[in-house]
Image 1 (cartoon, rainbow, N blue to C red):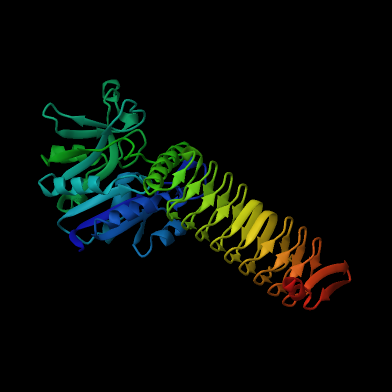
Image 2 (cartoon, rainbow, N blue to C red):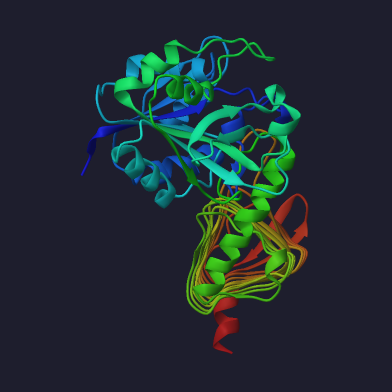
Length: 441
């Protein structure tokens, strides 16, 4: 059920200059998913009336990502208060709570946001999210009075020596009464070291008007903001630890968990074994009773039941490996459908191909799928044997039960149950029904 008196503003206009990247900060990925998507998924569980994003000028990438939610443009980056004001036209509620969050804070938990909203609804007009740390560094400090009430937030650059000794820090997020939000923001000025309009000044102004401000504490890890590639690497380590734990709790065997990298959307079946130094990209599904051997890389692919992959295998996007198949060492599969009980045990490249069940692809086999202009398909039937060191020049079709002799370059279709032997480069030698007679023996 939609909460009609709750709206959310997510600030996503930061340039992220410390990222040293042309990509918007909130679009950098953690475990294969944009930073901002983690926050969106959490906020959606609150069922707010609306979520408004504040983005920078010309940031079409972020606008496209957050659709169908509305985006408002912060035309000039003049601080966090200025960013919130940029969203004013999109906020429809006159009473209730406006939750202000930061798009580069992916780990804020649903329960924490609910606590902020509950405290706001119980009488506090402004609720601030904070944390305690032994190393406050350059975080803004939360200043309390003797009664333990929040009276101000001091930005690091504007803090005195005594204020810098405070280890209670600003987490950034706020829940503000919609009836006072805009009037408080109107009172904020830019008389500070950065000449910006700080959202944090809202607390000082509220206290001057005897408006109640409160604090909710969360852990430092939960409130981590990502502003640099160093932060991104720390966050990746944090989320990988969580994903590995989840996998182990679901019954996946990770022989050396810290060397396995998981994407946030990975799906594991039962009784899966993952050896050390395996990387899973986005969009991977692993079936039951599979073993992914060491130093393998899999992305956007489905591995059916009872499959062994690797070691040193690469399964690229668009691939499906059928049940009971073996994909061995130094094998690369790209955009291909490998049917059940097929063996590609070593040193092969299979691209843009469809391979029937119970076929065997010999060592050194290559599907030559690209002619320099376009990519073409290779079709290999059921129970086909491709000899070692063969090149299949697409587009080409190898019929059911056919045999391709070792060292062949196949340019013409091979009929069912035929033997293909390359006699010379100008022509192929094909013996009709040769393999059928061989199978009878």
